[in-house]
Image (cartoon, rainbow, N blue to C red):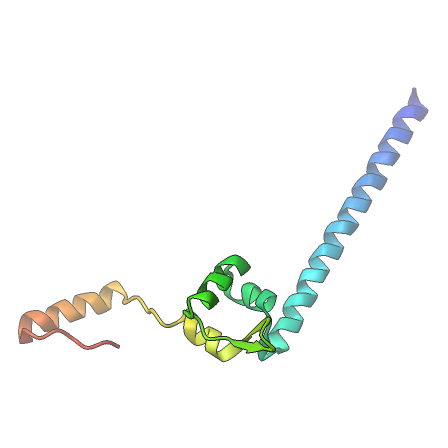
Length: 117
């Protein structure tokens, strides 16, 4: 009975060690992808999805509606410029509560709406 418990426990440790190794390898692959992504200026659909956090499906919809800046090479492959993607992601700024209160105070005093910041 003691030998069986040892063998079962030993197999369990080996199984867990393999699972841990798989998890570590998966994490290393993800880090490698992100490291390579940080060096790229021209991005593929997969790269753009990683950078923006948007699904590839949603990016395809945005491309189809011409709602996101993109480039086509030879008709099929879609590319994105990193700087243009960053501008796209930051184009709809939401004012802070303090900025909104300041605009309201300015409107009360002047009767005019404030411009965009």
